Length: 533
Image (cartoon, rainbow, N blue to C red; front, side, top):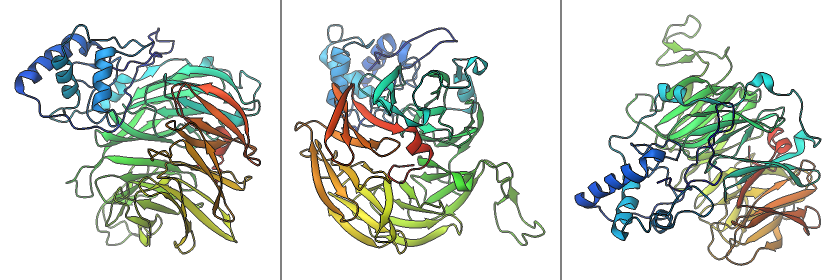
């Protein structure tokens, strides 16, 4: 059984593209306890129908891993339907005629049952998984197209697991290629805009050459992955894993540098890595740990200062224990965990929050919390943006539970205003050349089809842009110059809707298969204030 197999899945020679499908993910609704007899039956059917693609141990193969951690958002009913009916235009067959209802139910229960003991993904596994698709020596040193390479958009189409490359001037697609399924955490670009790195939910990291429009290399860095981060020169890549509990560091060609087991300082408590981001002025990656109240800073500068590992009697005379500063974690210990965070403009400070909504301001230089954040609900700080307001720099964030956008003064960390919205939202986007910020309400059942437009100076909602009720309209990204704002009609037969960023009128639509996100090269590499970093 090739479960949820992508239409895009292909197998070619070692010199060509190989795309392993990955699972659609979503929140799990608990299955009822499984009887031993049902479990034995499910195991037999799994080995007969599923193991050839998904691995005998459910860790994945040509198909994705079938583990609870990788089925994070797939509803029980949807999983059973896919097993029963397959997926149209994909290589996932239907088993409704071959298996009885109780056998399908048992298979569904099996894939949501944790593997005990928890599966491992070792350094040897990482090295063995690496695929070199193209010889870098054969790649041209300039773009093979006429479009401005810094005004390209990379559009992740989740509907059929492809990525489209869009000309941001003509607002037309120039290329489309098959991707790993369930790309997550946003693609990351090198500063010159040539290479982009994608991370998938089941641990695959893909290096893509935007100038040559080719997949260069891939490696599986984990079993369940949150996101990736890349140094501006493209020489270092960091991968945040939920399973196993590791932070994996790769070189720019996706060769393994090291895999760090993530534990607290004493090595007693293990943790998932909830997010890792790159901080250019610090020549470092910064990671938040989901289960341990620490923030890690990992320098990718080979000359980084050594890190003390215990009490130091005298720094001048090196009287103490130290480890190399390069690619080792420098810890900031806290009272509360940070699930996600936002950098200030100079990257000296992070604003973070736990899943319970406990907000805190952490200075990375003094390595401690310096203030509390008065946030409610579940702020989505990783999607925060900044702008100048009445002579002050402010930051604004959506909220996954509360129907508001919270605007915070970055000087004294006070709340400037809570802007009521139609419902809890995920994405907030703007551009320094635009007066407006766009916010969705995609976490709301009744208002997910509505984008609201905020005037950044009056801090008021001035316009609503609507899709048909029941559909999802979300994730705005601007062109390089801020003239146009592109929104995702997040449906299987969806589209990118292009709006004039001044008049807020629709300009055109580009049909897409569930365009879950779009990312402009210039805005991302230049760290434009209106987009997440």
